[in-house]
Length: 127
Image 1 (cartoon, rainbow, N blue to C red):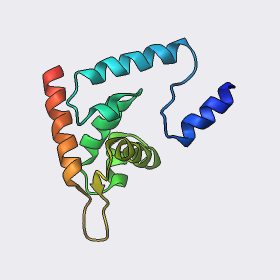
Image 2: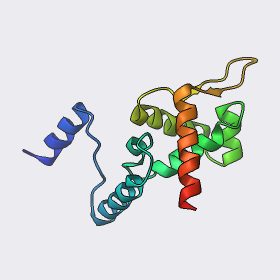
Image 3: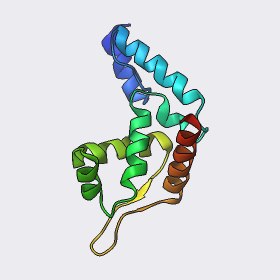
């Protein structure tokens, strides 16, 4: 079976793939090791490269009234922040934020509260 065919199969069955080459392999191994000490609720988001950074951005963004304001304050693009939160929602199995609407700021869902609390506690233990 060709590499392209395997990649297509993996995408069809939603199997995460790592990048190609040695540096990617090392980074993936480090991400997996880092995630093994995390609370179980966070592990699905920590299996790949950048998982801890995405969780950190979610925790920080949750303090702002909208994702646009949060992105500006965090120094990232709004599209990138929305994409990263969307990836976390997919990895963690549900919506993490109730998006802001006119006259109502965004809020964390119950899952989002659990995730942010677990992440903050894990970060304190690691420090």
